[in-house]
Amino acid sequence: MKPQHPMKIRVMADYGSSGIWAFSDPPATGFRHGMLEHHRLKLPKTLSDGFDQWTRRYEDEAPSGRLDIDAFNADGLRLAILLKQHLGPDRHVEYQGEGQNGAVLAPVLIHSPCPPRADLNAPSLPCGACPG
Image 1 (cartoon, one colour):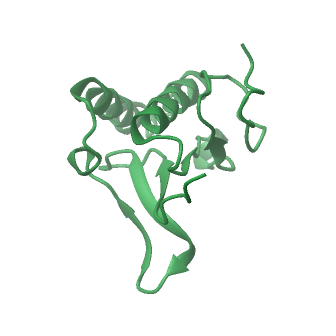
Image 2 (cartoon, rainbow, N blue to C red):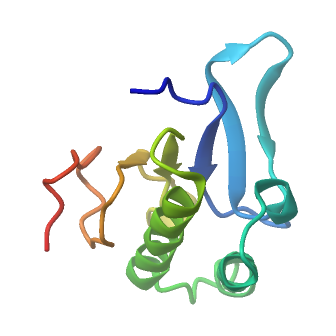
């Protein structure tokens, strides 16, 4: 098995962001995390557009408390799974969802291949154990 790429990817909403973040664990010298532009990952237009719509929804609805957190997290998790499929099985991809009142949930590791799921409480899903 090929070793994982040293830079890990997190899908997480934030104001003015692409929704995709790079980080190293443990943090590398001089680098803890940073936002990644979609073109740096060579995202297909449909996936890039999906991230744009998702982050715009966060910016438009979260400040006023209108954000449907369950639906938003389901969409974010779906985007993370599509990103993992695009980047390949050797790339660490995780999703960090929104909690109530601006809190964030623990990151969920995305395994390949995994269909979208609604339960964000489990920390990861091993390959072959994804709900059908």
